[in-house]
Image 1 (spheres, rainbow, N blue to C red):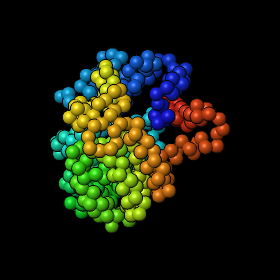
Image 2 (image 1 turned 120 degrees about the vertical axis):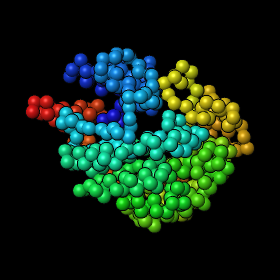
Image 3 (image 1 turned 180 degrees about the vertical axis):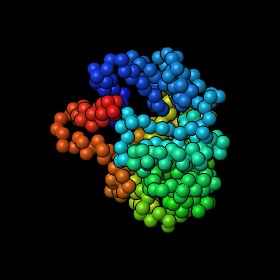
Image 4 (image 1 turned 180 degrees about the horizontal axis):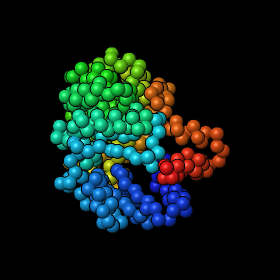
Length: 393
């Protein structure tokens, strides 16, 4: 249950695993791995995309922190021809929501985005159709899995990509369902995308609106003006009706962003936007300058050159000096908190498509005690029990 393991809370899980088998290595990686590099509890720490690094580890190369080739650019990995294959000991069940990566990178280059493969031609990093078909078919035939998170930075970056994926889906003998990050401003110009994504099986999406200020959109490279964004949402609604759950986000504090822009967004969502968006959330802009820890993370264009965008960064706090009236990160957080409260009554929960923790809840809802006790119960009665059965088979 990786969603429970966060900074300051991981030791109890590591300790439990070591009690079962003290030879088990506990490994951490991911976008926030910098938080753990000084934590001696983890046996191995992997920074960034680790296809090549992890192969080296499996072949015997032992380091505490694997921080070379973090972008996965090494010559031994051909993304388009790779897939994830699960074994019996992974204890996959039919209600599992697996991740799948169809293309790597993002064709856009948003100034506030710290994803490592932005500004990349994803046509060169898209899985072959037979590879995608094999992964989806195998997971359904072996485990009955039909639900996925598509982890592409932008799923609908190219219409031909959606057409390629749809050909694969239509050739399957079942209908999978997906969640993905999409940009609705693209659908404003390529209306056919809405139907393609629906036919593929998209039933939950996240849309990064980010700003309601047209000048800000242009400066950070985040789509067109708000009228184009609204048109894209309308195009999707016409096709999707209420079948697709739409979650959208707004970043408070981007260059030239004003408090009035946030209030205008809140008012629009309250009066009209909730017809197109099921849940809207506001988050303060995150910028960072963490000294030597910067070596273990990816930076945005603003992180790397804050003066160019009129920011000063100190650790995880920032100040801003431009014509916008949101001058610092504390103010941005207060505005985001206010906006979240203001739109709460219009947000629709839970998601219409699936419940994230349905399997965990099914085993633990009736268990009294702490989260630690619930986790131990789930591990003992469900996961560990299955694992032992698989190993004994």
